[in-house]
Image 1 (cartoon, rainbow, N blue to C red):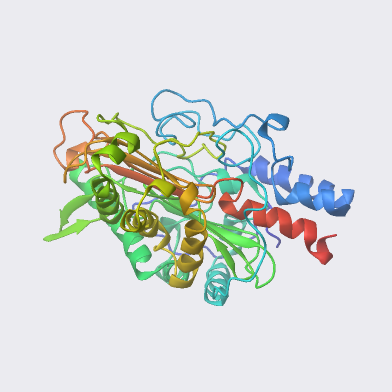
Image 2: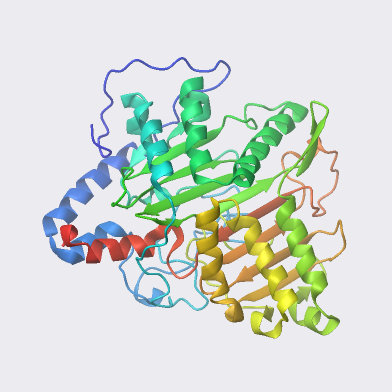
Length: 449
């Protein structure tokens, strides 16, 4: 069976955990059939142009005005996709070709190239192959997509989103162990711990409000794009409430973005132990803003108040256009630059150390052209929003108003606090999901020409 097949074969189903649904609904049945026929048509075209079309769901132009609009999907009010806090409830679908985050609708060329990084990707390849081998044919059909599939972009941080793939609730203990091994191969100890804590709090908060049907530790879904390989592009997505990991691999290059990390609440006592998550990015952000002089803060801080939701590039905002704002890296001293990098490190450090090192080197090379903007307070417990924005990295940390899990921590008003945090890391200028590397691979690899 190929990854494009849509017909399920008879295979023994695993013993599923009680109290949870089975395989995710197949709202994408026709979409997969379309991709299957579309991919065949593209291959028939032949030539590098055909492979370019397969490699990306964009026209390949470096100017958004010559392609689809670079805006996000229509917003359905605050928190709607494409609007502030993109990824909230609403019309959650992609409405245009992928282009990537830009400052003006035009991508900067030559930022990303195919080259050796010395990142050890063999362990994650082996773990992904083992995970796939542990799935039934039915599960594999639901989980595996082509590497150029639009499925990459169909993720959301909200609990009610109709996801693809196979959920943790669909898997046996043995299959879940293989999934955990894949995360362990891709993430650092801190990254793995963060994913586990987010899920753990989601379960405990769901129990606290009496709604574990919507909020639990098993409503997280696996999809794999392409076939794990040491030479061909592939990747995986782990997607659920407050937790989304996109992980692209090409040879020894890794692109781990977009990644969404969040929680409500961010700290909760569970079985007598206080579990805290998303604290690293909050502390790093406060350390940076407090390192600035009053004059520098007057440039960086665009507002002393914090709106309920401020995130600009959440789910379904892959093509957001946002001009640089705030204080520029070349206006900082050495100590302040280190604290700025600390914000990015809180995210990059959730990947394995070698991949994180490559990512941070990339960020450092554009440090002078990195901007930081801030809204809200700067006190220990103040709600705030911060955005770090450069040609190669985009980070947002957003302290939000109480949401559906407010009852788990006694919130009674709509004031943003550090108890509800959304944060994201992206790669601007077309390399989210590794799409720019994917495009170059299909254009330059001899066996694709």
